[in-house]
Length: 481
Image (cartoon, rainbow, N blue to C red; front, side, top):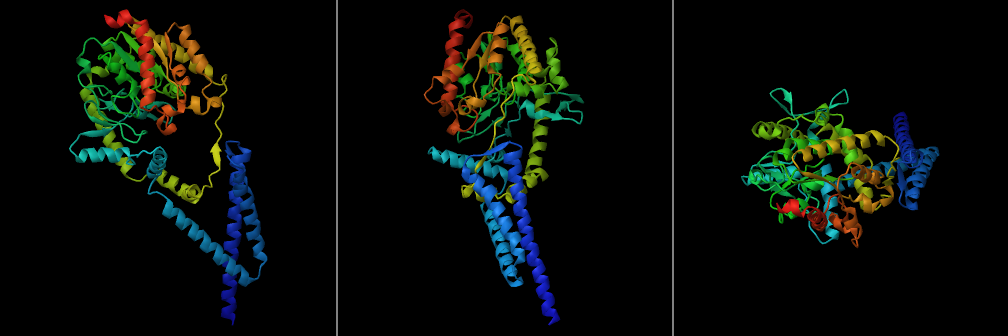
């Protein structure tokens, strides 16, 4: 009898723990959403249903579970069994719906998006594409951009991960003459063979001693993520074969300046297209943390990269293989992210259509920390202009619009007008491609599936047409010589 009574008391305590613990968890969930959606103001509900689901329902459930602690032992045990089995079932379903890793989740969403447009989407990771190409006997590598080589130290400054002869070196392009896997936003991966200096050009272009046009800039100039013959530099090259693409994903103004001083200077193009996007000031802020990059503000500084290609290729290949091995091993960070997503029931809520929140885009204060970056941008552009003028070339300032300008115009970059005024003030000819996008009947249609950040083939075609029209009009004598 005592044994039965002891078991009943123990079962009651377990029931109390389950009911009380679950009630407390519901309260914590409520406080979590109150904090993120009401107190910090960083997120907002997209529907009033969200307030019912994430405010009222957790509060009601918490009250119900905590009140159930007053029930008779038998009722508490029955209810606790129901609660425990429900929780186990819900998380089992979440694990069933969850992709095997975070990259697969991104690919799944991209595939669903492409399906809405009647397209297919290659869901392989970039590393999987590289491995598949290597199995076919191709010497393939994932694209590694200069900005990804800059690693932050304990002092807040960044330093290149590449060293040659025990000296810091920051390569400004990829591995030369290798099959390079770039990116996928349009459904298929952009894959190309890098030129003799690691840039996105056809082989042999560096042997042409009379470069007419060189384009410098970030991923938009690089040609993300369309076939190599469809980016705007390649389209210009069809008319002017001696057109050089020196763009690299992630490049900000200092990296662009460095590229001019290391590579464009040797080709001495008649026209240099400085392609600027709305993220460049943010990149400039990060670039200033690199003492090596800041040295390019000195007129005569040079790493001598052009003549060190073999050593650069070896160092980059070694670095890439080491990074690949890290990716192939599950990192602690990725495991924590996966656990966090599972705890929040991300996939189950997504499938049930219970996602009602979004980040509130923070409106930038034009007067906040803008002065130093704008001043430095001015100095960088002046340095670039002087370098180009020294070989009798002409520097154009090309403003390339980003998707944000059309998707969220109310929070688009407030520095746009100031940047254009700055370029005009130092007497740079300006090509504002935004005007060509603005007159399009549907500017968002110029971005892959209306969602991804870079242009699709039609977007790049419009950029090329605008550049070709304005540059040809102002430079007929220069281009014909």
